Image 1 (tube, rainbow, N blue to C red):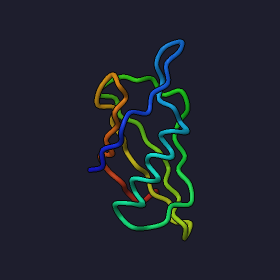
Image 2 (cartoon, rainbow, N blue to C red):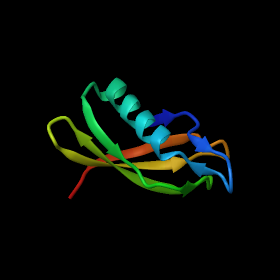
Image 3 (cartoon, helix red, strand yellow):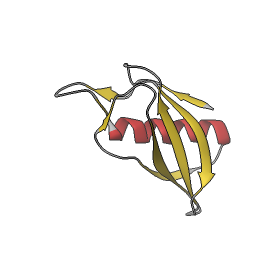
Length: 88
């Protein structure tokens, strides 16, 4: 399980910053599993809703695709990666 720091943007309702989240997931994965990540694709405008889960697509340097399931831990938009599985 990877813990990712806060990735929220304030404004009209608090949402998860897609750009910050994608960068954080990529960096955390590269540091923990020691594989190069080509790209991470996360949904935009995900509301900061503690306990909610959502997924991001992870594309490795060899074009392998996996799905990261993430959970919003609190109102500060701290995120935990709860799984990383091959995409079917």
